[in-house]
Image (tube, rainbow over all chains, first blue to last red; front, side, top):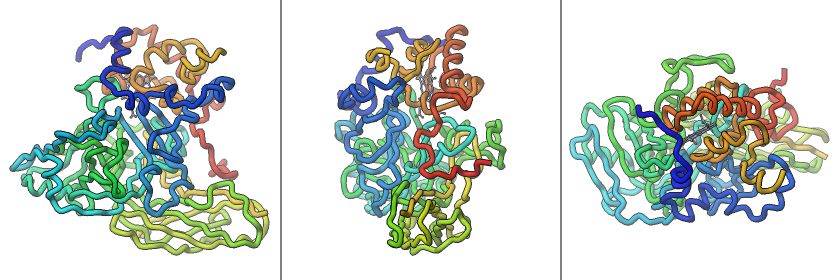
Length: 415
Length: 100
């Protein structure tokens, strides 16, 4: 490996601004450009520099990082049964490509190669000749809930809202792979988008992940071009993305250009080391776990969210309160959702809808009455079809803080 | 602290090494990923190594690396007195989970 030097000032200026459109700067870089006025934060030393930035096309999101852009939805803004585009979380590993900023798909091709008999280079038009399917599919970031771990785990400190369930239209990954003719040696997929590495180095890849062939062949794994009936938004992968529902969102590569079929586990950036991996065995909080003991996360665990009411509600004594939210369970589905208003001593079952299709989240609701005036916490706990429940405490600490599926709680004061 | 200084340092608290962190750590990403994380000195050191191996962070002279690590372990360390709680939202309810 060559001896790398810190770039000089002009090289750095190039890394920062070179080759990027004004809009890229607005979204990825631009604390100053998007800030409506300086007066609010000037006075406060160490004010959070992310306060009051807004993201074009988004509403109700909390920004964790502006460059690369990472933003989650506050739980009460996830109340819709199908997550609207402006309310869906964003997890970017690199910079949004200019083709997506400009919504320009001219000349876009998707390459399929590797362990296939007939490698393909498909235009969007050719891809759309495969039979299209429309499904509601939930995507959750592997690191959703990371902020709950103690000692803290490295990375964006997602709380509750790195999850969403939108309706996607696209073709089945399996149909495309079959038409390329999978060889017997096919084991794993590797997906590549055209987002830019943060360093600005065009030869570096921000992220390339994939899944075992069996998951790629699942009928609900899509190569999608529409989200909720609209072309994929800039931040969600325009013009093409993978949707690998129920698995860490990082397997749903955006701005998709290239699918390579591997004869072994894919080893692209963020497949190896500690990325999107958890220890093979339970460890005490803060433990050092050797890399060889880490395994790739596949299905996400059972989880639920309370989307109404918003926490810290004041409610009138004697008035019944409708509580509602969503529940999902990775590759599986949710059998029941229970709620408790007495710290888990008593649980009542809620009414729960079946998923609109496999991998769609399910909606639950219930009417609650409060026996006395006072302070309550509503806890929601989902159970999947195998009988596995959400834990009431933050589960299995792991070095990168993935898979926190502890029960969600909201506070209500009955007056 | 003047406006331009606060603005220029992207929310990094004043202290020895702030300039070096700003110069070396905000070329690729903003300070937001730094301010969100609290780690021991050793973990910060490992994070820098990971960025050098995988993400194109350049070589850091020993004295520069030390200045950066001094700053990070002081201002973004694991001590309770650290200025930034690792979870900015806090718990949205009053009973902390399992405080004992």
